[in-house]
Image 1: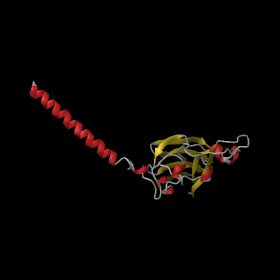
Image 2: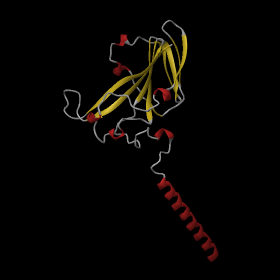
Image 3: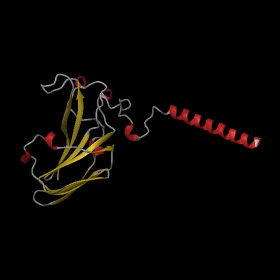
Image 4: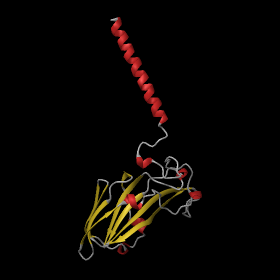
Length: 207
């Protein structure tokens, strides 16, 4: 019995030593990103999700599509099949600002899946296909937005941006949508606090 007890104690000691070594090794690597998409761009520190990341960069993003003047369109991106069936009206006919029409509500998706595969019919009924490589378009991983650093609220969480692929007749455009907390609202009814929401055109190609 004593010999058996001693063996058990030895195993516990060995496990404790192994665990301590693993924790020590983990501690040595705590400052290193675990995944490639979390490696900061040149000149940046680790991702914080605040204005301290300036200029703002992103490791994840949301996804959305818009289809106008087409007969149905389908986008497959990051295992997210997105589609709009039937005839789609023109953007102009909606009579609303673009930031009120486009949405990026799917995700978040880790940077970056393989190129998006797009299939659709143009306004004249021509079947079209295309691939759109987000990793190439956003190779620098910088957030596209118009807000100066001094207007962004310190220490506030900045949500991941959205990438929106828009099919309009024979043209595919890529927009970035952002939600950025402000120190002072840009709305005249509010004195402090607010949120910038907007979309920025990043890429466009006609097929």
